[in-house]
Amino acid sequence: MSETFTALMLEDVDGKPRAGFREITKADLPDHDVLVEVAYSSLNYKDGLAVSGKGRIARRLPMVAGIDIAGTVVESRSPAWKAGDRVVANGWGMSETEWGGYTRFQRLKPEWLIRLPEAFSMEQAMAIGTAGYTAALCVDALENWGTIEPGKGEVLVTGAAGGVGSTAVSLLSSKGYTVVASTGRAETHDYLRSLGATSFLDRAELSAEVKPLQKERWSGAVDSVGSTTLANVLAQTVYGGAVAACGLAGGHNLPGTVMPHILRSVALIGVDSVFAPLPKRQKAWQTLADHLDRTKLSAMTETHKMSELPELANRILAGAVRGRVVIEIA
Image 1: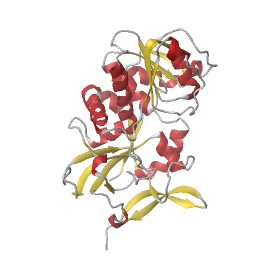
Image 2: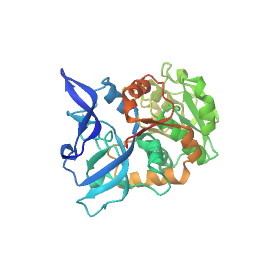
Image 3: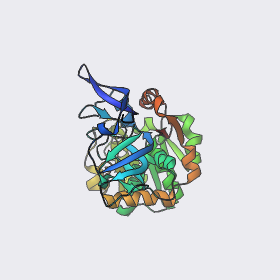
Image 4: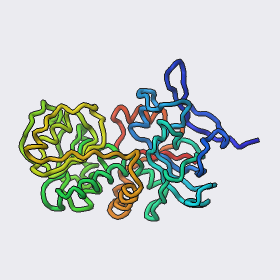
């Protein structure tokens, strides 16, 4: 009899996706070239939407949820990977169009995998996860644009107590930037200060009515909120500055104008983590390996069993999760 193992499956119930734990076998997995034994996954905002059923993330059902994977290759039909390789996978439509990480085993396409940097354990890799990897993509994008410089000007991070924000604050601080953290939770200030934030901006100030041009303040910014927040950040960015935008927790609209862009030469850099090409992924993970403080990473992380996912999904949507949540699969 084939060995069974537990997966968190999204299935159609009365026309709506509903999450539940199911026993499956390797024969149930997709027919991709690399079989990975999953050690850890993570919980991101998108995972919370999928598992809670409050957002229709999965585009086909049934679907194994979880957009992150850290594990060990068990079998491979691809010459790029062999049994025993430690690998990480982020994005690539997992939990949307491709089965994801909330399962002991998963089959993946070889091009979805990158080699886990020796600097990190698998648990640390998922403490970083898609959120941390996205933060690194944003920091790399700002530095590649060439308008931020350590010790000169302030860099703003919105949604600072969340997964992307926490890692962005830590990375930027470690690189020598002066980091201002925007959050609506005063109780997170000590936590964010420990990650390297030097001052704070109440998120309510960025939720006010958008004026096209405001006092110039930010040499650069990492934004995971979108909507009015992003519009106000753009209006406050200095001449020639740039904002790396990667999220829409506050909404997908952008109630701003072109004035910051054409009068102050402010750049809005869109950052996608799901289908980012391999060189950008490798650079982001190298940035994390070189500059992410392991003590700070530990401070922003909590680890939970897979069985706790339904409760955790509701917590992250309620804004009751600080930093990163690692999900232990094995």
